Image (cartoon, rainbow, N blue to C red; front, side):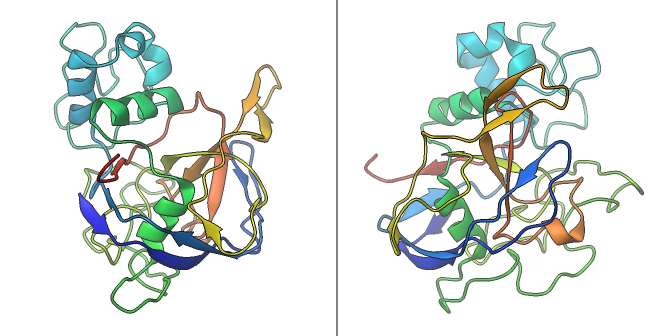
Length: 263
């Protein structure tokens, strides 16, 4: 894990890229945020092998409803749920796991950690504690093709997940990898479109009053959950660390946990 000291930064951006059919991007105004407690954040996204260990020893509800916890549950899925020891398909051990929000929360709790708040995630991705600067991207202020794993990096025309840490230059100032691309990641906050506090916000966490999102066919609706970071399907305009997006809680996305000393 990487140590993140307490501090203050400007969170948010005025406008993000247009929303698409699967995600809604935010447009809340920038505002000052103060984090009063230092914390530790996972250096890498949680992998399939780590999540398989959780399933072998973890939450029984997730094991029983495995198709809701994981992306894919057939014979070609990364984790073979047909077997009680949940073996991981060869060569997929170090790929980021893609789990739903409940599965992500349960994994972090099993590991003695928790999902980061949205403010903690952005602070860890952008802030350089040595200089006090807030970067545009985890690695710096300029986009350079090939630094992070997003659309077309591994396979033309579509994204393919890479083993965590493969794109070594996608590293934040505090040392966390893959916060720019690979898999976008769940945070603890629900999806909302305003800051809901006066500046500076102190240790913000929004878990009520979530904006409702629906599937494309409107067959199912639920309070939206917030995602942070780019992914293998992100265009270059969607990689800035200020950007936030949202999806339904039963979508499948990446996991990065945090730990706060003392609880």
